[in-house]
Length: 574
Ligand code: FAD
Image (cartoon, rainbow, N blue to C red; front, side, top):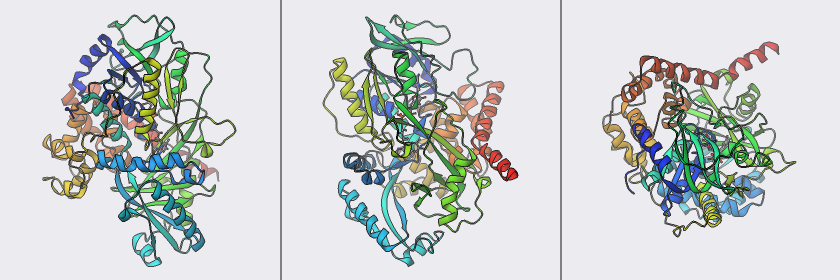
């Protein structure tokens, strides 16, 4: 693959290119769906542009459970085709990005022998569909193995268990890898460029009008809510070019693809203000605890009182627990509120099924929430709505894609792109073999890769191998010193984020490039100032800008945990 870099310093050049060229496809949305489509389209010979309203992956694609999984539960719903496709995708992702699809044992406890037999039958079917290798197939854990393998599990509640393989990813980094791959194949990709209108020629969509959120008069501090600022007014006369004021520019393309996730309906309204909504948004929350407070060794599946399953996932020094699945009717937002009830719902199974005495909301050191952009099925609660994707074509020819899962992003992107190409009369080269994503080369054995990373403590090397795969040594070469005394983050990671992954704000680095805000109990506070300092030097920020960045991200970090105040006041009331 040609070299794959998204340099923050080349933003103006990219805007000039976007405004000057005529593209085959312009994709709206830089989550996994948009990134997957851009990557597939660029590899199949199309001229591609992609515009993201906020930071890349700042919507749902950085809020998932971070599992590449076939969705065992959909088997029970009889959705065999989806299960087969996603189960097979795990293998492909592991091949093209082993660092972003690492196999882990998943422990499924069972209350009775009969329950265990039923579970094993389902797993056998699942593994057959996913063509799972013999070494990776599920196995029973005896009581002794259970005591040794997962001592925190209360064996009085669950005397049996079965373990099977699923894959753990870093959702935001998977998005970045696809965007960098798309850019390497010629795509013009830009973040913080909300699309505000659909351009038309003779009634047909012929491009979009966007603004550059970094040059629209603000000092650029803090994040954006990714909403694109759309007022649904849409429509413009199709005259291209950048007007140079307020950062507005037009991107002309033969086909417009709307991959805006929870904002799909808002973008559809730009094309047709009368379009009826298609989405049912469902909120999913995760809370994060220190691993010493919740000492798990494997990914654990726990049953909830309403007969759902939630995951408890160990990751470095953290264990995250999620997710909820509740209707969200407060409109699209990048930062859905986390309520005390969400956290209580996630804590209840821990108390019932683990010897995790006394774990409460106050023990959480991080949390995140995202909105699932489900295709509405009137009358059904969110837990029962299919996760299938759906492509629709609007009156001006805008191709909208909604639904789906992170795991199935490649087949989903292929389907949407082929439909778009057919509709717009684009010549698409035949499908190409999956190819290693950036970092995917040389990452087949992550432990060996980590051992080869000199100059950093073993836990840091292990984390770097998993974050950057075969590119970890290049990251270290940019600076192996810790960003602060005792910190896990090294200087090279900030430089890499700015130089190759288009990081423009402290929030981008802490939340989506490194995951410090999600998994590092000390670093999420302690690294704010050092990251800002390093970015200020690289990007030439003023002191005022640096201070604003620090203030904005601290506010964000505190807002993630605001449920603690509500939990306390609920306790006081009780
Ligand atoms: P998004 O990631 O939201 O991307 C849409 C993008 O469009 C956003 O970045 C937004 O800023 C941008 N945008 C919006 N308006 C505009 C505009 N006007 N101009 C330009 N850009 C715009 N799937 C799995 O396979 N495994 C899991 O473990 C898993 N867990 C999940 C857990 C939770 C809690 C949730 C909510 C989902 C989970 N999923 C999982 C599903 C998966 O995360 C989503 O299907 C996927 O991330 C959706 O990606 P997307 O690109 O469609 O949407």
